[in-house]
Structures are given as C-alpha cells and as structure tokens.
Image 1: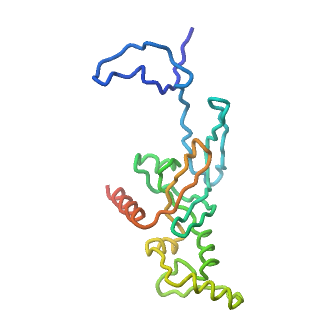
Image 2: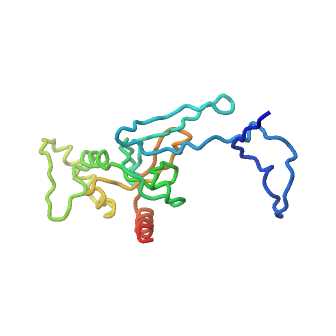
Image 3: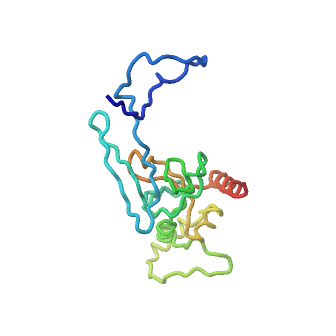
Length: 211
C-alpha cells in the first residue's frame, strides 16, 4: 500500500524539550489533521470574489475565502461601520512576501476606499473631510431646517479629527487593519487605524521601504 503524506498538527514527530528524538508511539489521529492554507488574495480586474465551503469536524462548516475585494470596516472613534472596497495590501509584520502577493490575512495592514466614511461624515457633521490647503470645500447646497442646522452645529462643537486621518481622507485611501480571519470565516473585516497605532505603522512602512 502507498502511504500518502498528510498535513498533521500533532507533536508526536517532534523532539523532546531536552532535544532528544522520540519514536512515534501512536498513529495519527483525525482530530490532528491540518488542511492547505487558503492564501486569500485581493481580487482585482478579471479575478472575481471566490469563497468556498469546507466541511470540518463535527459537521460544522468553515468558509475559505480565496479572493475578496470588499469588507466591513469600523471607525472606532466615531463608532461607525461601513462596507468598503479593499484597494491594496501595504504592510505585513510577519512577512514581506505577503505584501508582494497581496495576501489578506489577520493583522495585515491594507488600504481601503475612504468614500463611504467621507459620505457619512458629511451627513453626520455637515462638513467635508480631506480638504487640501488652499482649496475650498465643494458643498452641494441643500436646504436644511433650522433644527437640523442646530443639531449639526452642536455635533461639530468641540469635535476634532486626527490630522493624520484627515490627511488620508484627502488621498481617498485609509489605512486599516484586518481583524477577521478570511481563510476561516470567508470575510475580510477590520478597523481603521488612528492615533498612536496609525503613527506606528506609518513609521514601520517608511522603515521597510528604506530597507
């Protein structure tokens, strides 16, 4: 009989903590099996979104995303979430190869479309985001009642936005971190980077470009 090599997550084949080799004292178990990684990629152009269903232990199902081009992203400081397009994979702390191959994994830093958040901000605060210096905001003149105007003014009072984030809105791209596991749940959801975390990743990206 020909034995086929399988992906296994057991520790029977590993060395002892002291470094000594140990003989396999039992066979492989079904609960120790592993599967091929999903290697979820960013869908672009002619490549369409593709998610496959995987039957797993206990008759449960996993959703293996092979290609994705959108996801739900949260803007933490404003407590708002919007569905938006994924534009690019820009940084991965674990492996540069994942940036080159545009792989979507948990913890990867990606660029997303800023338009849905820009529209929400305009609607919620009555102000446009990402206006470059020397340019005036192009506002569509729509009639608002005095009550609505007062409500928007009250929201704007004392409200400030992170200057690094405002700078990104002018380019139409926001940096975000993937919080879900696309190869396990078939979705690419996450949150927008802001504050100290955004500053950290911006420095890391500059450092990696120079290296």
